[in-house]
Length: 618
Image (tube, rainbow, N blue to C red):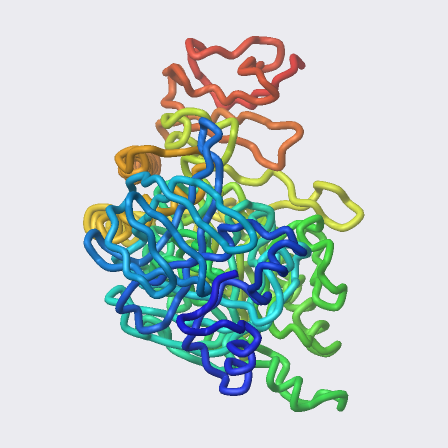
């Protein structure tokens, strides 16, 4: 196994770490290193070797990612925060010899090797054997690095069951390898559907509020893997758009390379956690209030703050019942406070039900107390939420990761902060298979939301908001005056900066997670550049289309594609008297046959009215 320089017993290192609460040495493993131990545990020889970027202020032994290439040959990939020409030190026990190219090295020796090239090599562990493989040293440099380590548990433990948490430490280095932060933390895998991705997202909670990489101090932080976004840009674009259009709780972020227990995990987005307790939302922290009060009858102000996540019943299957708030149309989970009292649950349930009742009234109608929807919902924050879901065509709209919050002594629901756009524009929804359909969709609204004991009978709030003329008019004004100009600015100014900043790390990430051997670094570089170009173009086309549509809605009919087994409808505006055009029909259930009643709808069908299409004749 891999250890720090001049140290033979990993147990000694761990003891020093725990006693001194120091994380100055980073180790790959928590098991003893000896030939007998390797044999007894059937460990691979490559696990006995690690490498250190010379000059790194924290001794970080980066492990080898061993895999077989497409020809079946063993290949050792070593990921390090280095640039071409920088020195690398070998970390291993005395007696172990490592050959790279034509040179043989022992522990403490310095290598100066070319990056990304495959070099013949072998590792010789006395008493165990010799393993031959190609070495490839891969640069993950130019941006900050986050090193996470678990004291006793493994990565497999973290991924075994959702919620598994390990005690460990976190060290953050700036892009120039200077130390930004080092301290203890708890680590767990983050996400719902993304929990099962090969490349995991992580949450780490520090012992106290700390500012990292220039971001405001807080205790809870999230590392988003962006595993299904080849551009690594969708979340960044939408979070920056949220901040630039006035969302004070939009999370700040930084791009970082992540190492867990010495193994390179890839390029990540480090984000402030959306939370009141230890997160980025500065509201009255009822979590603390409730902890102080204990079991005593609550007499304090229960009006806020609250952070609530909208979702479907099946998304909250594991949520404790006391944290679920129900309305006739929606389920939602209280994220903060997690120690919700009965009084607080009643206050929140009553308020949300009153608000929804007003929302579902027609224009001109009022509740029994004389109120309308805007008396309960903050208009601009929900207009922002609506516009963002429209721009991004977010598949998870109101199904996962969509929040609202309630301030103390303020009986209004505020939409946001924005969160989680990986399953959005261009990449995820399988039946959107061309760029034209990507930007032509009027809405990807959920047509129904699963509600307890009612299957898919719930109706989206955003869809209901848009039924109110004052909301719709205000939403369009928000789009034209704030969202559209800011998005154009982000695409033209911020995206090129981010692309240059993360290019090397995106290439390293591609090597790490490609699932196949890549012989030339130009392949992942081209792939990354093309992904950025594509996502930038699709956002631009999408914005251009919405601009044209919102300026002259009366010139369009709406063609709605009903997806019977899905939770969404696709609504496509088509100019009156025109055809929908080529390559726009969604492919659903392996078919692109759509019917208006009994008539087959084709790309040549002239649209003369609003039309609802199904895949069966009616």
